[in-house]
View 1: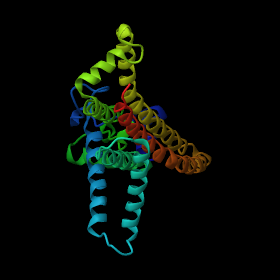
View 2 (view 1 turned 90 degrees about the vertical axis):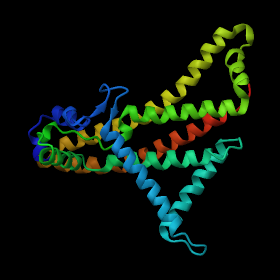
View 3 (view 1 turned 120 degrees about the vertical axis):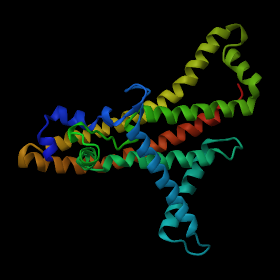
Length: 279
């Protein structure tokens, strides 16, 4: 572990790395915790979104009609894969679904991949900036590099998908048809209280499950990386075990990162398709 880690107990060390930008550096808009807007989450999400757009732009700028370059070929493979998956899951005619799927999949992968940055690299960098720019004790400076390990970020994405669901439903059925289904499906008009309750729970559970699944997996992965890193402070044996477990978990985490992005994307597309079905 680093010098910073050695000054802290394992619990304090983990808590330090799980904290968001310190309060004296304006960490949030509004209250902290649930429904807070964390500056580090916003900055990382915005920067990674720009990197994603820049990567696509570079691929299009250097696109050739003949033999594609390596980056162009990689981007084309990714886009063709996502386009096929979206068309298989969505049975409507909207041209918006594939761009939404591409954005979700690629953006979430980039945000998830921040988990591979060594934990103390971010902590040391944030501490150095806080100490030399803002004159703050580096131990009081926090920076979370993984936006998807912040439940507010995953909820924001899932709520966006929820509004898209409502938009797709209204576009396909109209306001009257949408409201009619809320009160009459699946038990008929005489059971409208039960229908409304069931449909409301079904609608609200979709964005919540989307957000919590992604958040839970990424937050859990972050905790495991921190525990492995703490193990490295227990002498030579601990350092060796930390290296072995870190490599193993890192390789397994690659699958988690890609799988969680794929699941979020596919469920979003499926939900959009279901909202256009008439009952």
